[in-house]
Image (cartoon, rainbow, N blue to C red; front, side, top):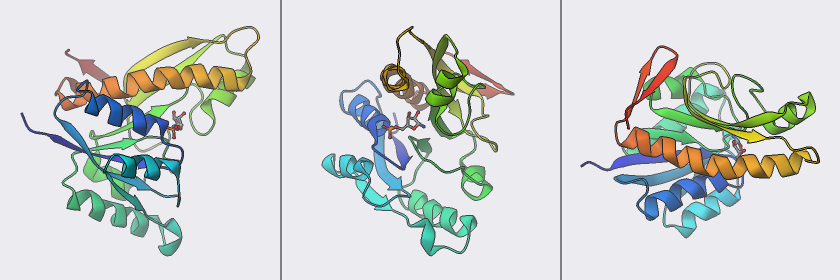
Length: 204
Ligand code: GRF
């Protein structure tokens, strides 16, 4: 079986990146390899994690481009150089534009810390907590135009407990993110996902 070459786009600490790397290294995600980690923020811990695992780590400085198209074209060149088939957004804090999305439509996956379609955008955990929901969770979905709108692959519920702070809730959600993101990647790599309109069919 062919190896699926993966790129991970990040902006921060990279705990979800770590969960993907670990699940590839321990064989839970077979026939896959993270070839490159790209950050739009310099000096992120996510880049450090990549280096620790011998993975190429690249900072692409958005400030050096005239517009988003130029920035995304620079990322595309890196993806092409590594023969990337699957792009993961793991705490990547930018909205992906058409330049980057079009060639990777159906091959770009994001993790979001709330039960979509509720609470898209920034700080999903905080939004849910402030709204007073009793159940929140996390969502892995294909990326589309629009913020956190694409077809949903896996969701997991997390109860909001009576004495939770938002940080306590976010920690429990993060634990589940580290389970469902690698699981979605495994399903993709094994060819078990198909998109039919808004629905993702899983044949596992
Ligand atoms: C996660 O909560 C993820 O759902 C959101 O950004 C956060 C990234 O955390 N998109 P990390 O960098 O993976 O630790």
